[in-house]
Image (tube, rainbow, N blue to C red; front, side, top):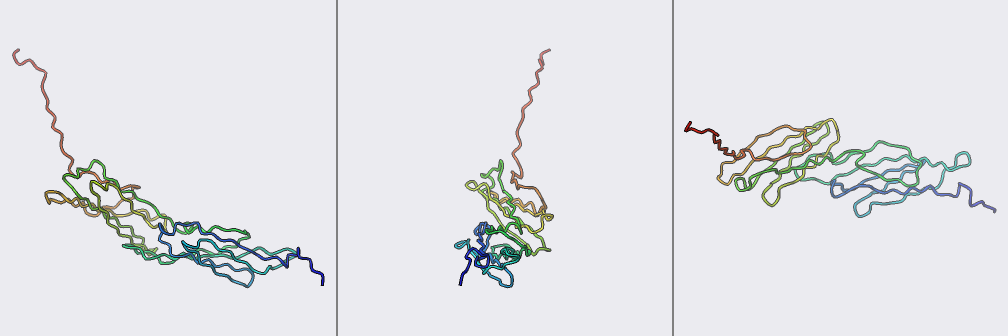
Length: 220
């Protein structure tokens, strides 16, 4: 039997998949990729320790050439996060690709927006510790984040990471409690904000005394 090994019928449809994700920072447990070629579906699980995989199928020949179309989708499974309620799983739409190598970027489905928290001109001798609490809620997306940060003379900055599914929901809430050395704490209460940064300032900045000396000769 003579066989032409260059015939597309003998080829394999191969697809290399790599996760372009920060599993630890985004709290991702795994990415479940589903790929269907013709009638045959393959699944592969990408993790922090195994972020790459390769799939292959017997080729489908259409019109004398390999049909390279693969239907692909993926699910992102999140680990439980302290002080945060968010979807445990989000899914991508199904798309058709003809690539031989594909990078899966979970942040195509969501974003993580950092909100820096910075103490500026704060008198830590009067307020040895400052508690900064932030909340971000998007009920329509099942998101409710609540996190407390403590600032002091040795740690004067922090960062709150907003997990965002709906970019139109930008507002968050912030509350600052100044723990005073004389036990007369100051509580700002909850304040709404959409600022890109939380700046913590002295609630009662010291007043500067200004002495005014008239330039007058009183003897005249």
